[in-house]
Amino acid sequence: MRAILERPAICVPINGLVRFAVTQQSRLASESDADMAEWRIDCFAGQESEIPAVARDIKSDLREKKLIATLRTTYEGGEDNGDRFDYFSVIRQLIEQDAADYVDIELERDPGQLKECVKLARDRDIKVIGSYHDFESMPSEEFIIDKLKSAMDIGCDVGKISCMANSVQDAETMLCATGNFFRENPDFPIMTMAMGKHGYKSRLYGGLYGSRVSFATLTKASAPGQRSLEEMKEVFDKLYSRPGHIFLIGFMGTGKSTVAREISEMYDLPEVDTDYLIEEKCGRSVQEIFSEDGEPVFRMIESDLLDELGKWERAVVSCGGGVPLKPLNVRKLQAMGTVVWLTAEAETIYKRVHNSETRPLLNGNMNVDYIRSLMDERRPAYESAADASVATDGRDLADIAREVWEKQVFVF
Image (cartoon, rainbow, N blue to C red; front, side, top):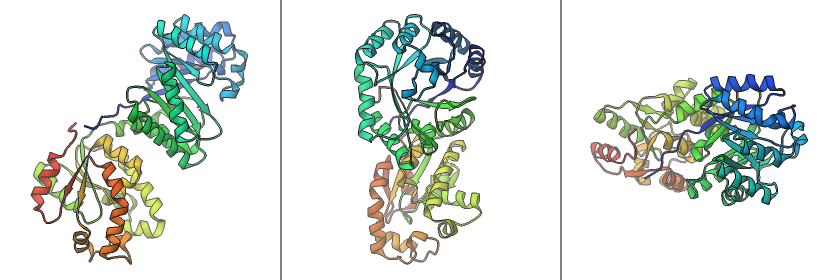
């Protein structure tokens, strides 16, 4: 049985320079839709002796919202002010005076002092976030996983890793590492994100891979690439609404649209076709978008459209054949319902589509061998995406619809 991922908490920064600005921001955070706030102590221009009292005031202002206290030096991507303070002295004071719900400690710090703070925090029921930051580059997936494991092994309550994405692939690396770590360690909370303009998907969609917290801006960003609280909340409201859709995936000609129509009539569910929605939105046919803009643009439109399905009432959704080829798309589908893979033999598909002029991927290649090769290429993606599969060759349509209905994993 597939686990249902929790909606991530949204944390906003408090990064005022003086105490008055800190107070203003903490009260703004308290009144916002954020779930948590992080006080970036390295932004504070006051004295070290003031820090615990200011943190307690913030905690009081936030009321039921949780407070993360973070001190970062310039070496760790922080502000100049942070270099004035004694790092572990500040951390210990925050813990001893119960001034925060979480304290963030960099994993690259002295191991002995780090472990002492972990023990001190545990004795006072304060949680420790073991964090690692790289503001220049994205390490390998193996490195990211190892860092998260080290936070767990040291005894931290949460593991956090945030690295710069210099390309879209860098962001994919962070998401893949997050998903792989979560699959093996589902009970250890993690916060992961790719920074910079290329990393925005990790902030909006990291929760689909297992990240428990995402950081958004309320006033001033505390890291490159942060999204606004309003944008993040809007995306989360869609993705974690649990509408309980039935998603039909599979190669072209496997009968997705026909089966969706039958399920709609038999079980009184709205019917949705993603290709039709794209055509409606763009005012052009799928074939025209492919020929005029290219497949990458079409796939981007297709992926963005999936978010909108979170606003729909429960429906049976016929997905374009390429939807499951993107791992992020698969995560979106699985968050919103059951994914059923419809299958058919290459010969069956050829018989169903050989007279069609609206299959851009088969232009100039309308033959069984090419269809089979393309199906073989896509099979691993379909298999990994699906909660169940249903064969459609030579079967009564009502029987196929009933079997799909019985395959539902979650009915929200």
